Image (cartoon, rainbow, N blue to C red; front, side, top):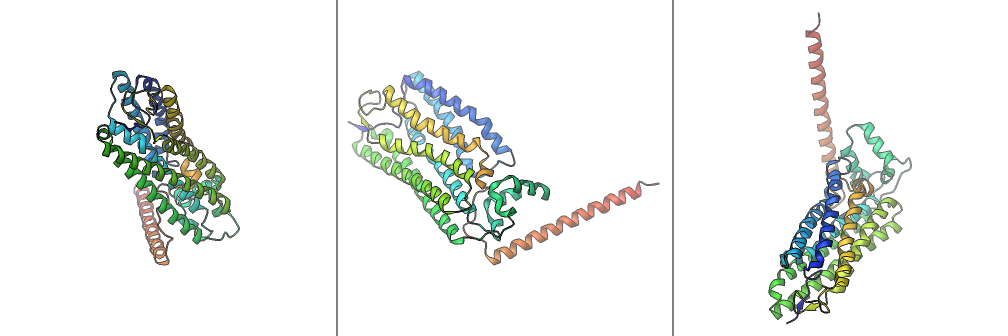
Length: 356
């Protein structure tokens, strides 16, 4: 009985060398990833999904290398899930970054304090002088330092946020259907009904994933062409992430029609031949690695302007919310001033008591 071919084919002896190679490649990324997370000016939770993805890939390729040496198929369900939908975690991060890229370009002089880029710079700076240095060193914050009044475009910002919500649902649906399809895999080997259900869910997941990546990419291009203040460095970085993701998504759709009658088969559709394995490792695995490298190779927080949390606002700040925020800031500043005054008073008293 024919059943859907495992993603990347079954684990064979010829998987050992590339599995070791990619485990080492992802291992080499870990120092860079942890540096980005520990360094104050590059730390952002917007890319946290890719941190777990990189660590998980080391686990995956370690398991594949072991299975290749022991002539076993390894944990089939786990490998089907992680190879099939793992790249969607990068897609989710990419969606958040594109959203910040678009949102930052819509704020004007009077509202830019709400932008993720501005909030991120303000939280990093410890002094007003350091804040001014950050403003002058980051092109994406030019609106703040500009002497000209820049108009706000709230409608473009609203559209960008709602479009981002739609893309989030597409990615989530792709992940759910991909996981549901992969969980049927062991049973699908001997069950025609399970095999048909698995094939359908894989196609739905791959189609939704490809559609989401294309839509997010087109919104990125639209924003760069139509929003005058869209950042060129941010656009280039996002393109370097988008292209590898397109490679993975297109490859997934292109190979899903394959079926095989045995996991150990080298026949047509098995994806076990050297040529099939080469295509898999280049157009999916290597492409994923390049996407992660692009994310952490640059200071994504500063280049894209995503701050620590990304665009966490679901809407623009209302007058009531602004009044509450200003009141809290004034109270915080007052407490800080009182604390400083008490400290200075204690220092003066200490000097007086220790005097002659």
